Image 1: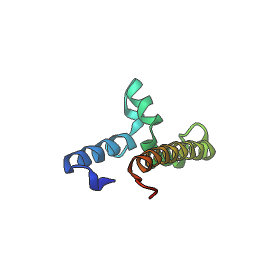
Image 2: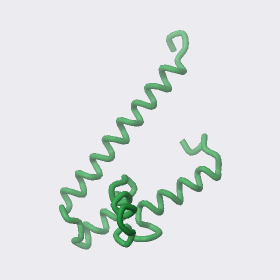
Image 3: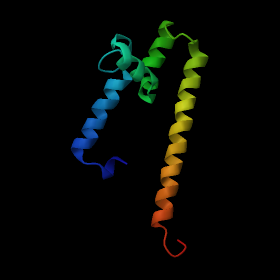
Length: 96
């Protein structure tokens, strides 16, 4: 996917993913609605959620963290399947 993006767009997406994963600043330090949003996005599962589980700070423990990650995986896989299906319907001509 990154092959179809410009270099500046890919760089911006990298910074956004690093920010919302907690790599630049821990998500628990973010104030109010921004912190709640950052913890609800799938990027938090890459760094912040596993750290919180290891430190014992995740409210639901390991099972809750795993459910969060599986939920986002299913959502993103379903979205990817829908987008791929739409692209395939648009690009397949004369039966394939």
